[in-house]
Image (cartoon, rainbow, N blue to C red; front, side, top):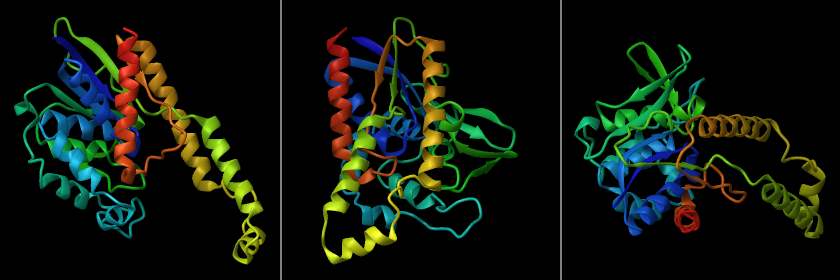
Length: 282
């Protein structure tokens, strides 16, 4: 059996692709001998290591936009919008918290210490403490305060921690990166939507066309979001060049955002399809 040291990138909802990758690897006879991840990669990797990936996928099928809103424990704070505890508590209902050192395979989650500007590795202690620290998207989730540190999303400093995975003799180093964007598809979609609005002659749309500027998609939020995405992507590519993984599954998407948790099955299918394509060429 071929052993794989599997590293899963950050990426919000796009990281649900990781589920499909894991499922396809197992279906093709690969053994995942160790796992590491940042942010959503840390969550999916931790759930898999705990033996609860099937339950997690089944739960994700129930997630709608409305349910995501219900799971968002909104907080009126200057540094975050969501506390983040309600989501973790929901997952704990079918994935019991365990000590990382008691997991059947070596596991590592990456977080960022905002206060001291350094990377933090979780290789022991509570699995969910590690996941919670790794998924703390800046300004979205409440940061985790621990041992004099302020812990935030691992993707800030190491979006695909290929250099932090524990290796075993004879394994293959595999990375899964969902930080890539198909910007041509994204831009084409924006243009299609704008053209559709202009062709719509309903009185409501005519009023909206006069009120909303043509370049509404180029705003403070999209400017910061794309800037952040570009920086994360470059960090991922640099890590790939430094570590030279044996197998790299690079998934660029133009139709899915970091918030599309209600589209889990489509994202899982993308992961399985892309993995089949990569493995068939080996």
